[in-house]
Image (cartoon, rainbow, N blue to C red; front, top):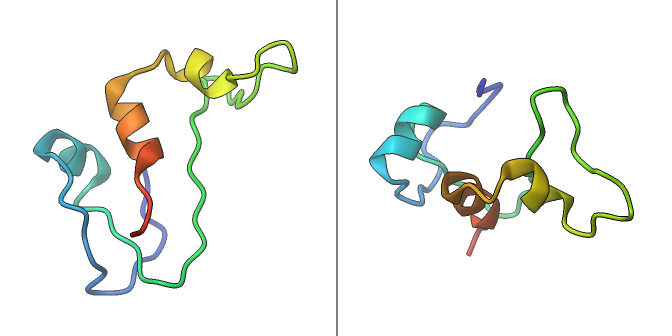
Length: 75
């Protein structure tokens, strides 16, 4: 993951150490904000088609770390 821009001092969610290492630090959002979060396959696929109503689960393999990050939302 590449951080493109972040203002100094955003609130943090207190990510578990392994995720904080993977993401280069804590994760937080300043309110109000707009953010997007999705999983993608190695070749860039984000949806499998209408016959797969839950493409994200199929693409991510229901990995706990992916599911944790997808479920993060500002309070």
